[in-house]
Image (cartoon, rainbow, N blue to C red; front, side, top):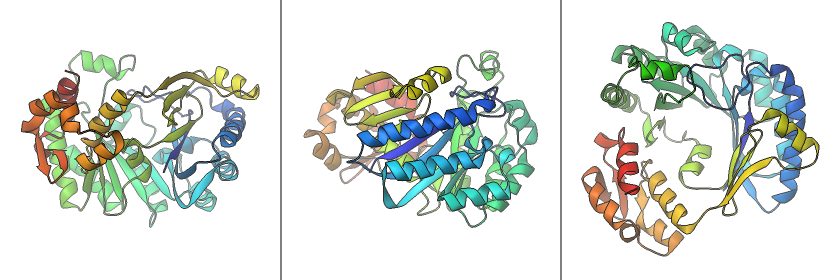
Length: 370
């Protein structure tokens, strides 16, 4: 079933690695923005009456930085304008430095039942260097507020000077604080971000060092009962993110808010990245879409293979044939033959071997693109 993504573009401070659409200097616009978001939800809801949605995800930015009444209001509007399943997964991203007991209580009352907490690292000096507004103690406080609830912790690899001991402390902290899910991903220095200069200067760990960290982190997570279900995502059994699984299975989703992207009805489309343009457009009664394209059969086949190989499920030949009427090994015969040393096969399922998980992007991109 499709999911709903809602973008909240406000934060207290822009992290040095962040290239998402976020506005640390425009928090005063949050009330006006949310009023426009409610209107966009209404406009989209009128179009999508035939759909039933299984997940709602508030991302950012930092959704937890704005007054919780606005998220609660957005969720009420979603429930009023969209059809949801009886037990939807509803997630909000939170920064540990922006939560309180009252805020979590309001989230729960509104129906939020999953939390994605931006830990990144348990080393305070590294957090400060990343421009994060929280420290490890704030994460412990947030986890106490979330005790007994379903929450995920983000863990970042490839930080300046990061050691295996640092990673051990981070994973151990997330585990002991009760995280049911851990996202462990490598820092990607994007051009235009402050940390990109560090990358150009050779001050960040190289690929071999990050790969060693990933392999070590993978072993720690496995020992603690977290099952890898996607390259960067690990969960206790039954706590996989339904919203993210939908992305990796090429499911449909609608994106709401500035810069949000959608995949629906055989099309991909994206809202404007400009905050003023977004609000002006919605106030005028128009949807703020600036880019739209049909997904070709060839593109869909390519996405199916690339995304499936990121997951522990792998590529099911049966599912591929059901979707496209052909055999993926024939459609991608040349790439399949070249990547066979990196693959393992079980029945009709093909997966990336564990020892090549970290470099799967380089392997697949190189061979799949010819």
